[in-house]
Length: 204
Image (cartoon, rainbow, N blue to C red):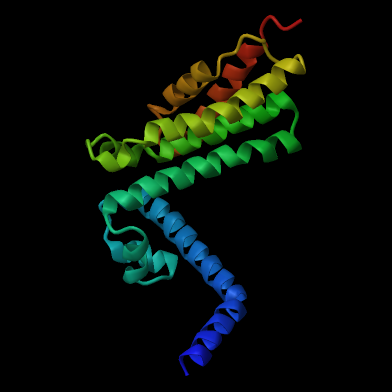
């Protein structure tokens, strides 16, 4: 009897492989929905916004949120990483669609928007909570390679100077967003365009 039960269980496990994949896909969708919803809620209501606002926007229950993110700091850190990934992952698509200097300009504009909309997280990220300790290095690991690739492509094409430093550009772009509000996006875009125009200076 036990052997039959074991065989049934093994058969069920084998037969259940595709459903298991579907479950993982559902989990991924729920997680992505939570992170997207949390990012939007944090932007408008701050990182201390009620859980019900996030779960309602994501279309999931509170249990799903707490199962993935037991602490508020877990959710905040995950939102930060999720948004960093989205920004970094935009670079290859821009490079495929636009010329090198234009792709660089558009990615820096995307980065500026990322930074401007993450100001609401700054207090939490600098709170001393160990949950955020790895975020600065994650930021650098994701952004520096894609920006270096964009700069190298533009320099190789002869569209910008060859001595452009990725870290300098990140800092300069971040600083351009500091006085900005949501209504200043056009101003920031113009300033970034001027910044990249400066990189063209001296190109033969």
